[in-house]
Image (tube, rainbow, N blue to C red; front, top):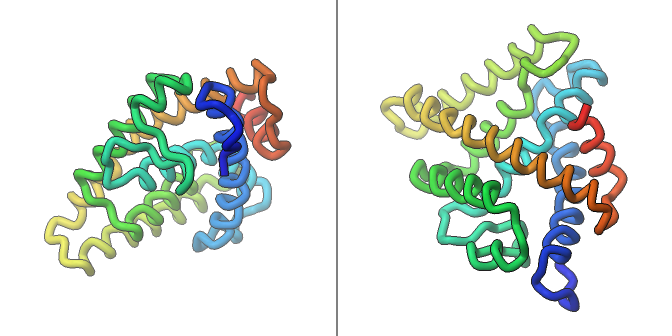
Length: 209
């Protein structure tokens, strides 16, 4: 619920996105605990994975909510942003552009909710992060990847491996979006124009290290 008393400017964008990001962080932590095998990892590895991938997941959530893409980025049901809105509110243009490209890509692929959830789990269970038990995290990620292929097969996708491969090819563009989003949040934090919630601030400190 963005503050209706604020004009549609850069401050309103920062304040609204800060609140949304913190709420989504809480939701992401709760969701991660339901990913099969996640709670079997050490607490240290759980923290590393969440601290390392939360921004990937938030960027992915944004483009999924915005699909099928119709010229609008859906940050929340009551906070949507056209390209004109983005310019008016000083949204970082490169991040905005990459997010829209990714939303278009997911729209062309007609990604389903099940594929989206499995892709999120693949993002979370990233063995390339600085985890203690790399083999276990890799095993869990492989299981999710296998589940994605099995989902495609069960739903009549003849080239199930090709379909899952095409979905995974969206990840490099997602990584670009994550880098740009991280730069934006560092600038917001540095400007000190809006108060950041404690959890969001702590996650950004980890991302900086």
